[in-house]
Image (cartoon, rainbow, N blue to C red; front, side):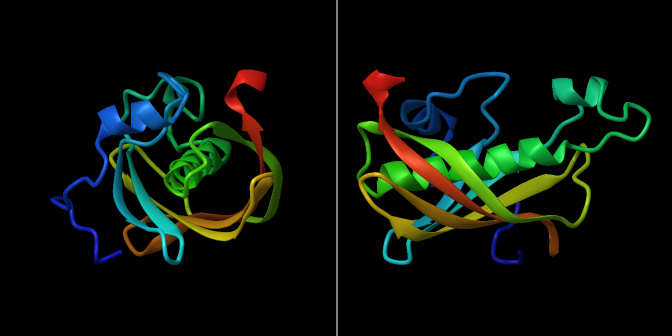
Length: 155
């Protein structure tokens, strides 16, 4: 999206993301958060896709593209940060459903993947989010996701 330039400052850097999410390398798939709006509620994250990603070794090495399921995971992690910001700090969001998933355009090494997530339902037990991953003005993936909220100590 034109609103987010290469020099758009981070609202949350990687250190803050590591405080919020339980994911770690090689499964932490977001690099920074650019925007959070708790009134909507919505969030925008960013993933810098590099050739150094381990999945490129086996996912079409002669024509590398980021696996769609990992783009979905990056969207879910961005949603996880939104859920945390909505006040559910003692819980972890777990996937329940993915609906209306569409893979529109490939994501390649060197791309900057913008991750958009908008909450449609939030409760103490779970909710739903609408998501979209974009490279520039092109939609890469879109999906609606449902999640359950589970106390951290039960995982």
